[in-house]
Length: 99
Image (cartoon, rainbow, N blue to C red; front, side, top):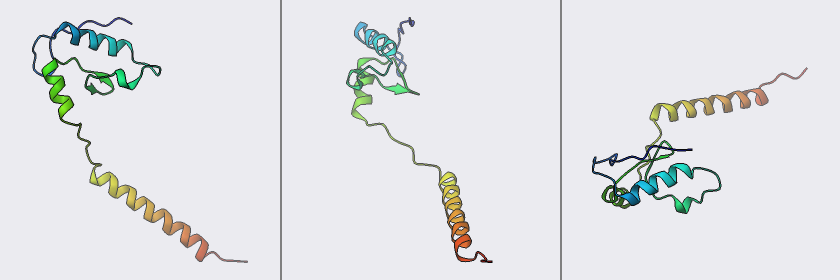
């Protein structure tokens, strides 16, 4: 699979060094289950490597990625569904009529 070689950093727009271009092409082509995670060094967006210069890569490595907390509405909906399902099950076992 061939990819075009990026010439500019996705973060700051500076020209990419040849080694960064090589890393991007390697990580893009080496996307597979046999590729060791230790070989991947570039930051990723949506599972794809992002072409960055050495300075931006060092900045990205120094700051760990932040994970967004789950939206409160979705968490509330899950809690409500859980409570209702438990109530239905308890209601079924406690109040069923025996004939």
